[in-house]
Amino acid sequence: MAEQRDDALLLRSIAYSDSSLILHCLTQKHGRISLMARGARRAKSPFRAALMPLYTLQLRWKEPRTGSMGTLLEVQRFSPLLPESMILAGQTLLANASALFPDGVAHGYDELQQACGLLSARPEEAGLCVATWSMLERSGWIGGFNHCWHCVETIDLNLNMYWRQGHLLCEKCANQHGFQLHPGFRKSISTLMQNPNIKLNHEHITLWKMMIKDVFKTHQMRHSER
Image (tube, rainbow, N blue to C red; front, side, top):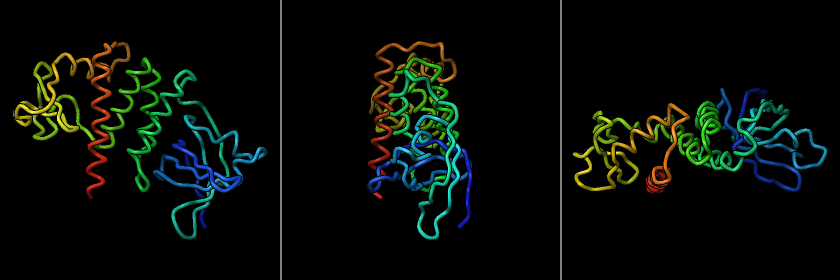
């Protein structure tokens, strides 16, 4: 059984038996992996203090003979990804990343690390929207704010667009259905994605959060129908 070493981000840990943990991690070179951390819940375990979410980690593990779950051999913890005041927002970001990058995907590490950087540079509510939207874009779940996600036509930021069932649509594709998105909203969001000093009003943040929730809901519904 070969040993592997890689930089990683811990998505979540699940208690297993009386003393162990099952880990779900995004790694830089191996994609998403699952590992058994034997004895990690014991008080004197060398894993206990190091296995923290929202920190950069380096893992060494042994690949399985059968199945897909390896065995953790060593872990080193490095710098935090977020300030302590943003830990709760970071936990939400991890949950979103876990849904976006399921078992078997070959990416997610860079996307989550970049998202944490976007979150840390902005006020929490708006930053969480920016960070999640960035992961949605990079995972291919959504498109940009400057084109219709159905016909792919580029739409000027001074024109209205429509939101319908988790999709941003031009006037023609929307066919008078859906929620109208005014130019001011699209301009503000597009600018905030690039500039952390832009401030969003409460109405825009609430609308953006609704749209993100709608994307996840629409994707989950389609996945369940397969």
